[in-house]
Image (cartoon, rainbow, N blue to C red):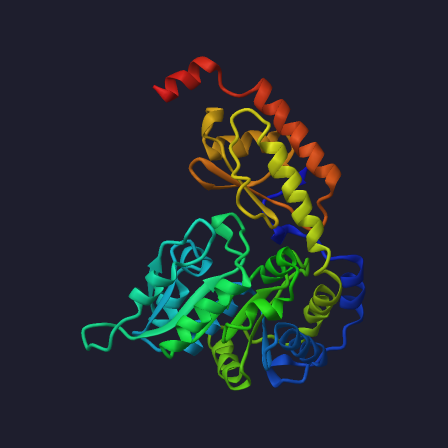
Length: 356
């Protein structure tokens, strides 16, 4: 089975398993787990921030950021396709009482600056207080597109000119940095705070980091406890995170190359449409409408053929390359899907009926 559902399905590397077995641990809630302390210092240095907080998940990292930046009744500005809005169970609103003002993402994943400016509330007792602007990079639901340094700088300037902080959901910030050939710190520089995941392309089994000013991180540590994120001998998992940051970043270029090979190959298969004009990182989105199947049906048939991926919309599927997926796996995926589409796709008569 070739598993392209997400880069969250990665398995820890041999080096990670070795350091997990030997990890020096303490009690992180008491602040004395030495491996967590090392990971947080490394993360802060790598992202160019003063301090960092180790959390179990990216969702918790974003939630802690929002709870720390915003008060109850405040409003944040975020993309309509953002993970914070789409896939975090509404935590900012449910737990923080924070409203979300959604702005349609441009095809390149950015938020139009004029739309962001227009969404910032004037001071008026009728309106909630705008407290935060959020941006996701890479932008998952826009195709995993990386957002460049110039745009990040312009968005940061806009936020700061209105006295607002900018939070970067950088779950896959290292994919963006590798795509542009720059450091994650350069991309994150305009953001006041940034969250990134260890458990996606970097292949650690669990964990994310929230980075920012030292005083902010101390307040976020309280909010981590508030939402149940205090951990004890967390050095066991933090050890794998150190390997992720020191050994697994540069190899993300392999995932991007495999995604490009996959995207180009899918465009040659009957019924699949892939936008090759978008910059790619490790995600490929394909429209399946012309196959005669919807996304759920195509996903189920592909699984029977030995390829796993995920539907994201009624007619769109997502395939994600990651650590453990090789060029040979890409070739096998294309071969299996080619056979599926050429031998089992609905007939021309059915397609004509669907079109009619």
